Length: 219
Length: 219
Image 1 (cartoon, rainbow over the protein chains, first blue to last red):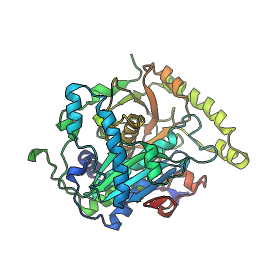
Image 2 (image 1 turned 180 degrees about the horizontal axis):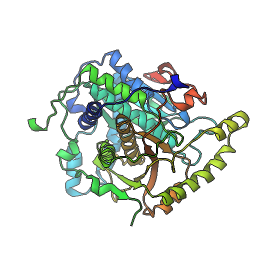
Image 3 (image 1 turned 90 degrees about the horizontal axis):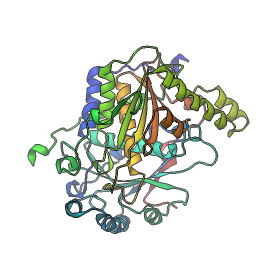
């Protein structure tokens, strides 16, 4: 059994470096992506980070579609345009003006797009029997691992969610049972913001620990 | 604008350290937690990692309930016991025997438990209008950040999902609109496995890049 034990003890400066990586991770949109290809070693490192994510019952229920084709990106961009037009109407007055002024995706500007799917398994999955969303959450863990890894490669990532998942599936000929969890845009950038863009632009305020931590029980 | 730019460029050895952290992150169960309190600086660092997670429309739709009370843990453990009994019946023959033999949680052994909730917002959320699950996925990103941060503090974390979310809410007096995303157990450990326990115990096989990466389109 001993050879199955990890000997790795992390040092405070290693903990602090992770903190810094998390602090500098940003959602990057098309106005900051550079038209510069991502080398395949970097794509592999990003995918390998996804494969190291935790998954419920070790089910690893993920599939990653890598998209570089311009026509495919244009077809995906169409569903973004449709959905964002509908979305804008949901916001009132000033918020609507601000919504429309924001650049919210980088589908055609990013050299690499990635659709990340949840692929359900036939039969029961350990740990997913009482909380059926657990498989999808495993896929989200893979996305977050990839996001952090991309940042350490100085590559920006943007998560585009203003899309009709069924239209994305159609464009990519995805199997019926697959569920779109995330549509990601990757590329080198001209800059990273030092804070979330929506915080800088005062769309929402940053929450602090006291706002969201409850001791023992509510009420 | 310039002061809003991050000057941080990460070096290859920093990228490699993140890889190593991800490689050594494990799901830890009760047979490996030590009865040793987690200092408050470490709890703060874990929560701060959660607060640095990306969130759709910067909505930060998370709430974290910190549980140290033994009676509360016992009440949560009861729903685990009920749910795992039901779950075992879903697996056939050998798999059922293996399921029953596995230690799948560390609720009462872990010095700190944490229930992580998604708190829906009134009104539309930027980026969540076409994909309503996005808020829940933001909370999962916070969980993954906390998991990685805990590992660099040499603290183990286990995600328990064999629970009835409504019963957990009841025990914690959670508001009706809150949705349980994750129930986490934190503690120092006697060891970390060097691979996922369910891989070592041959519950599932590790998937490799070729199994799950698709180029451009399916089929």
